[in-house]
Image (cartoon, rainbow, N blue to C red):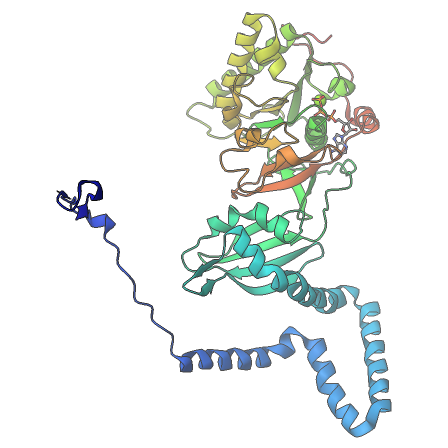
Length: 479
Ligand SMILES: Nc1ncnc2c1ncn2[C@@H]1O[C@H](COP(=O)(O)OP(=O)(O)OP(=O)(O)O)[C@@H](O)[C@H]1O
Ligand SMILES: [Mg+2]
C-alpha cells in the first residue's frame, strides 16, 4: 500500500494485485563443499602430470633427462647432454622438417601464445566484450580449454559459461578481434557449450594474389576464386545459384568476375559451359570478347541478350518438365552464366523506362527460375540500396566487397552480418578484391580476397581459349 505524502497520512491508495510473472524468487546460493573443490584440484593435477609426456614430449624428456645427468655427471655432463639434445633436435628438423614443425615449433608457439596472449588478456577482454559476468562476487568467465597453433592461426577451444550460447560469442567477434589484436576471428561451434575461436596471426590477404592456374577439371559448384582469411582456397558455387557482387567503384568487382570466368575456361572449351556477357561500361569485359558465346554492350542489345537467355531457359524447362529435376552440364545443354557488369545501368540508371522494365523482368525471371535448368546470373553492382536494385534478394549468394556505409553490409549479406564481423565498409581501399562472403552451411561471414586477373592474363586467356567469332543473337548483335 502506498501513502500519498502530499495529502497527509489520511489518503491511502489501494495497490494493484501483483501479477504472477512479477513475483521474484530468490534462488538460495549453495556453496560447493571445500572437500569437493580440493578433490577437483587434485584430479586436475594428477591428470596434467599423466598427460604431460604426451602433450609436451620434448619439455618432459628434457627435464627428466637433465636432473639425473646433473646429479651423476655434474655441470659438464649437463652441458654435454644439452649439446647432444640440441644436435638431436637439429637432426630431427633436418631429416623430418614437417613433423619437427608440428610437434616442436607449433607446440612451443601454442604454449607461448596461450601464456602471453590469451591467458594474460582473457579476463579483461571477455569482461569488456560482455561475455563474462560478475555475480555476487563470483566471476562467470568462459574457460580456455586448449590453445593450438596451425601454420597461420591460433585455435582457442573454449568452454562457455552455462547460460550463454555460441551465438553470443558469434555476435561479439568484433570485440574479440580488437581485444586480441587479430585481423579476424572465426567461430566454430563444437557443441552447445564448446566453441573454437580461430584467430589468424597475420593478415594473409594483405598481399595481392596472382591469377590462379587454370585447372583441367571444373567443379561448377566450387570454382577456385582466391584465398580465404584462414589460408584455404576460396571457392565459389555458380551452378544452382546466382551471385551478386557488390562494391564501390574500384573495390575489385572485376577481379571477382574475371576469376570466375577464368575458372570456367576448361568447361567453356569443352562446350559444357557458356558465358554470355553484358558490359554496359564497355571497359570490364570487352577485353575478353572471344571467350564469350554472346556479348552485348548497348542497352538494346543487353536487354535482347537477357530475353534470349529467358527464352533459352524456358525452352529447357519445357523439355525437362516431368522428366528431369536438375540440370547436368553437357554439350547439348551447357551451363549458361550470364555475366552482367553494373546491373544498375539497366535496371535503374537507363533513361528509357521500357529498357529498365524489360531488363528487370528478364533478370527477375532468370534469377527466380533459371537455377535448376542450368542458367546462372553473375552480376556486379555498386550501390545495393533498394531504390537502385530491388532484385537483390533474388540472388542467393552475395559477395560484399568494399562498401560505402555500414548499413549496406546487412543489405548485401543479410541481417546480422555486421554483428557477426562482416565489416565490409571498413575494408582498406588499398586492398581491392577483399570481400566478405557467407560460405555454405555457416552463418559466419568469412573474409576472402579474389585473385587479380590482369589485362595481360585476359589477353593470354583469349589467345589460349578464345573462339574466333561469336554467335550472333537476335537483338544482341555483337558490336
Ligand atoms: N583482387 C585484386 N587484387 C589486387 N588488386 C586488385 C584486385 N581487384 C582489383 N584490383 C585493383 O583495383 C583496380 C580496380 O578494380 P576493378 O576495376 O575490378 O574495380 P571495380 O569494382 O570493377 O570498379 P568499377 O565499379 O569502377 O568498375 C584494378 O585496376 C586493380 O588495379
Ligand atoms: Mg568494374
